Image 1 (tube, rainbow over the protein chains, first blue to last red):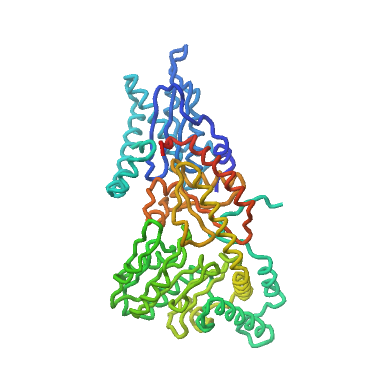
Image 2: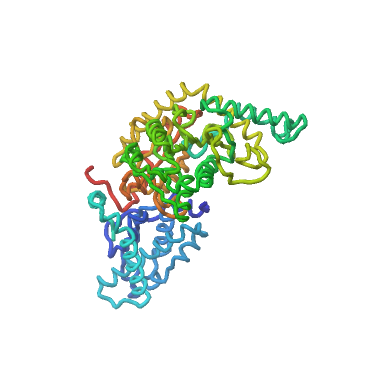
Length: 174
Length: 385
């Protein structure tokens, strides 16, 4: 089902865990639908004045593809300027992994989205003007999150489930 | 040397070497078509009818009522559609919420055609309350279909009681006994239709049977040369049917020792796995099939858990959404009220006659580290629990 590149990133994921020091974190996905990714970035200013993603890490709840794409996004973004990192797309993530099974393509967009959200948060924290593409993606991610919440509203409304979900170790991110 | 640990016997079991040996002559030397008049044909016919008698005997059933099919999915479909077409006046079917898709999806289809389908909820262990079936039966009810033992949880349903109450109300009762047959006693005297599969019993894939009361009218799904008393056309899968009967005979012979051994392993699995923090047993310790145990692990996802175990030589399965084509978690885990985030982190371990103590030890030695690994990269951490 998965190719060897995907399995290799799954076996030996790069840059996993939580950075001790980070500039921003992007949180995407919903535990109700089965995939959650948190992407941490540490941005530093280079001598030439450019903002560089000096370090990056992630924490992921999800399938093999979710873990492998988290790993690949972190590899692609590490050392890049923030402006370069914004251009990383889900199709690029999937392509760098040599492709993903069709039902798993959404995992690659989740990974690219997590990076996008981390950079978006960084721009807000730095009070920098937000590039149009970054903002558009942010709005799309927010819309998708709303759809998920609506789709699973039934689960959340049931008294018992509400208690159980509230009692979860770590809260659902959206 | 085979170093794999195969704990997915509810999906399928390895063919028993004795079964294989029994099948072999029917591929080449005894290759006849059971419908032919000549010696080769008579030989094949005898093999099919001997197999039918043997399976009937194991079930305490009349051989006349055994219809060979391509497997249990076809048997389930034949029970539902075959009856629906023969009794078009009755347009209500009762099943449980945790039936196999081979029951649920035919029911969904009939519902789209205007049938009423009552899907009986189960309790938190997966058991159907017979009273709720009694309450659901009305004068339109065609059939009640409740599985004998659930394929995901291993839970046993009170089918004796359900069969008896159906009989008292003159409603037909069908049970999908794919996992239960050969492992527990089936109350065949109070059951009208039973679905069976060979490959869950160390027999070959591609063969199963529907046991129906002799004389019960089932409209065929497959029309043709009128095989299987006109109920299921198509040249008999002679080698498959021979293998099915052989597997059946071996299960009957070995059942007592096997069930005792697997029950012991199941207890070890449950005790051992529950020692891992943030774990729950889905189903119940008792009143279950001896070979299936289902667990959920907080903060991790089942597909990656299965893949990590696979990397370490262990085959198991999950009801997680990420493992299913429609990205929905298992309907069974949802029906027993497993919180959806725990349903994503489920693991089914199922044993067969080849399972050894070493397999159980390997699983229990490997699983904690794999769970730990996946939790270390998960954004969710275990709380104080």
